Image (cartoon, rainbow over all chains, first blue to last red; front, side, top):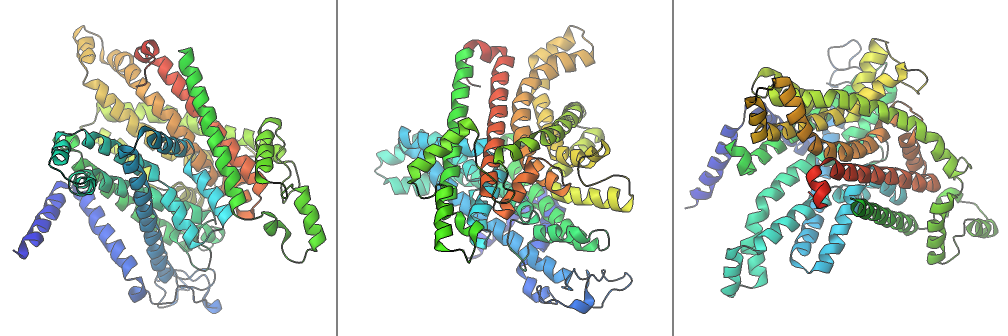
Length: 293
Length: 310
């Protein structure tokens, strides 16, 4: 009996694996490796990511002339180890994105469900907020908020959480409204189930799949947004750096020391590729109509 | 049709009003903007003078009314840093931004729609998948990463193209490519899906059965019907992508447009410029979306007659 959930999970993962093509499987493996590297950053990184060393500034990666042993990817303009900075940057980028996406899910989910079950007036107010949010490009909102409230980690998470809440609200409102009309909800209500019980055991399991898909899709948007804002110098402030900020700062040294920009830029590319491909894959799997095609 | 257009315009005005209100209160919520510009070491007397000058001593509803009034007479005060009227600073930036956007939109439409049709028609061969892989790259590569690569290769290594400013036609190439990449990807994907939906329709079979040549069937019966759906997305996507994209692209290539103005104002906390700039861009986006919405209804005869939405 104890082994049962394990097997079930294995077969679900197995089925998922089998449904992918070569690129999707590559993205899964690469994504897992990147997540692991971000988790284990303090163990893998050979140097303190903020430790400066003025005698070994702007050293190229190993294998090029003037490289210093130990600095696999070379050093940046302040002599900091680039590999260690990339690992910590990746860690911060991914954790910020996860926190932002979770916050967006909670905020949007709550408002969406509220709009779905509460009366017409509350629904109208929430949907007006959703429409307004959709009408303005979010980069503007983010620029404005970061400038007015300052760019600390907390504000950054709030900004990222606000990005994409409207999608969850829209999806959940629609799903909840559809489900509330279903005969099985009526049956549950007739059988005397409390509203909480209906919400938890009858509605929740039915909305998990679209929400998970939306989560993966919004994760890649949020990573992009965070990298862009940090790149522009509006994100987390130095010496802490996310990948986007490293590209932004390294831009000034591009002609002589392109590795400072290339390493974090390639890492961002790898991350967005993985998340995009995995998101599309999940969506295709979740959408029954597409699966049949 | 006219009532529909009026309703859309009213909606747009309402959305704009909500945004104006949010912008007003967000700026006030962060404490007095004076703390930032004045800094330390100012006498209490001078401080009081400045507060009176910026009318920060008046109750919030008076300030709010003045803020709303400024929307109509365009008097949004002076930049904290450059001490020039904000409206002039924004006005100077509009045309360069518009030029870049027009170039990027033209490139996007010329490439994305034909490529999307090709991807739909040859969806089962290598041509279709090659086109879609390129679209995916455009989607997944962040525009600042793309810009950095382009600058590195074409400006520093090959030394072919300039990267700073908007002096000559050559200056347009890299910013336009960067800005249009994501738009091309989005619209190409959408064109493909819209075409796929249309290709399976009965009237396509009828058109073929009555002996029309394939080119005519695809363009006149296929693209024309898919076009209505494409139109709705083109407007929405272009407005949103262009607004976010220009912020990045203009900053990287030192393009003297709205995006660059906004980023600098945000970094330097030049609130008057930031406020007015954000409102201007928001208004532009809302207007474009409303126009597209109206055009979309007008272009679809079924919607035109019934006046119903979608």
